[in-house]
Structure formats: structure tokens, C-alpha cells
Image (cartoon, rainbow, N blue to C red; front, side):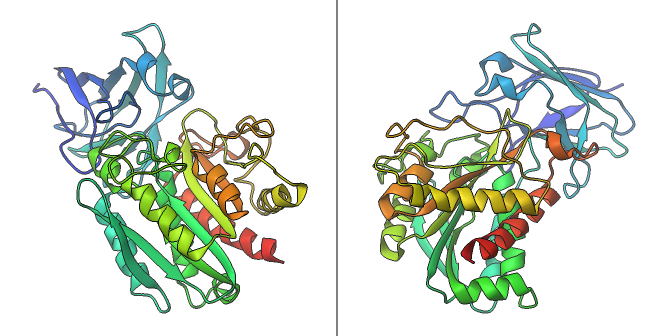
Length: 375
């Protein structure tokens, strides 16, 4: 029987084919350009109908986050709309760390990815649909190093200035699925939460901060190899024009509330990270973050506070990161929202685990929590 074919020469594709033998393949992840980050994969297998595929991604002990592989199941789709999981196993001792997964497609093609991809074409559809909605304004606030537009949406008439940004790390596609759910809510004229929030807030939204990394199939960096979420203290046109454009716009508008949306490779939970380590922090300032976190925890089982990142000591916060920089620069309530690549252990779902659908629902839930926070 002929060998399967594997390719990744498409939007957000990333895989290196080392060996193919019938329905089995040995693979590796290509590093981000000008960077040592490697974790994101996205590829297509053809010639696969009815055959049990055995796919091995090797060299993962040298990936960006080796702790992300134990307990992780690869994402798979045959129609590129519905993404399920296929059972996977990680062996640290095989070929410098190997993730093995098996799957038998019903059709000739199957697509595999680290998380359900969010293509630049879907991004443009999302922005176009939102921009065509009543009361939404669009602006091209910058250009990436690859010449792509940096898309920015605003809506609402209220005094509270809300900034929502996502996908600084392009392989964290959870963030743009979250944006899709949030924008569906906020552009729905029949949604009472949307109506109330738009009366009380003015929203500033960048659904994808890193178009170049997204299209190139990067995990964490832009076309220059810059980790955008370490560029907020001193962004530059040469290394991080995306952050420079967004921070300049924030300086124009001010910020009262900000959420930077991400995905976490290792922790099987949804959680928030705050700004406890910024200089001169007051109880009143951090109180806004603590209150929002408590509201979200009460509103949805898909959020929790038990697992998360260690809190920085007073005055020891990393000021190159968005949340800490924005909290200090604008005296704002700022936060990083993290979603898992694995399942949410406190609220598990076997077939899809953490999924695009749950990201979208969380986007809607976060808006409901914001409305309550304002009260």
C-alpha cells in the first residue's frame, strides 16, 4: 500500500517530515523564525482513508514547554470545522521526547494541530463582520514586518475605557476563538449584556496582535523573532511594530480595564494572572483585579483560582509584559487570561477537551463578568 502524504505549506502550517513508511510517520516541529521557540504544529495527512495512522512528533524535550506534552491529546479534524482529540502519549526517552498519536480517518484527509487553528482568512472574516455591525468602527493602526494590517475595532459610548487584545503569541489560537465569542455577544443588538456594556464602556479591541507569526506557523514570536509579550516596556518599529502601534493607541485613549488573552501549554485549567509585582501597588488597585477574578469564578465552572502562575513579589514584576506595563502606566485593572491546550481538569469533557466552542463561551462569560464588575 502506498505511503501517506504529509504537508504543511499553508496558513499556520508547521511540521518537518523526517520519515514516512506506509501509514506511519516520524515528524519534528520547525522552530519559530529567528527563535528557539517550538511547540505549535499544524499539518495535513492525505491518502489516509480507513488506515490507522501512527504519527510520532520527535525532539520534544527541546521544545519550548516540555511540560506541555504529558497528559496532552492532539487535535484532529476531517472537515476543518469540528475539532476533536485523538488519544496521544508522550515518551520522554524516545527520540529525545516523542508524542505518539494514532487516528483512523473516515475520509482521505485528516488535519492535525496543537490546538484548533484560527486562520488569517477566518480572522479577516471576523473583522469584516464585526466592522459591518452597527456602531462598530474599524481602523488599521499599523503594519507588520510582513506587510499585514494590524486590525483594531472600537465600539460603545460609555466612560469606562476597556481594552481587549489577543494572540500576542500566535500559536495560542484559543485567544482568537475567545475574541470570536466576545464579538458575537458585543455586536448582537438583542443581547442585553452587550447593550448595557456599550452604554457604560468604550471598547478597544485588537483580535490578533501577531498576524505574521500566525500565518508563519509560529508558537510565540513575530516575523523578527520577537516575543511581543516581552516588548511592552520599550517596543520598536524594527522588532515589535505591533506592540508599538497598540501602546501608542492606548496612550491616546487611556485604559481603565484591560484583558490580554492567551493559552498555557502545561496547566490544565483556565486562570487569570495579575500585576501584584508592580512598584507602588496599593490594595485599592489590586482590589479591582481580585474582584473581577472572584466574579468570573462564581459565574462559570470553566474558570478556577486554585491553579495558576506564582505571584511576583512586591516591586519584582516583569514590566516588559503587557499586563504589568498597562496596570502601572495607566493605573488600570489589567489581567492576563490563560486557557489550556489540554482539558480543563476541574470541568473535563472527553471528546473535545478544551475546544474552540468553550473558548467562545468563555468570551461571552467574561463580558457578563465585566458588567457585574462595573456595578
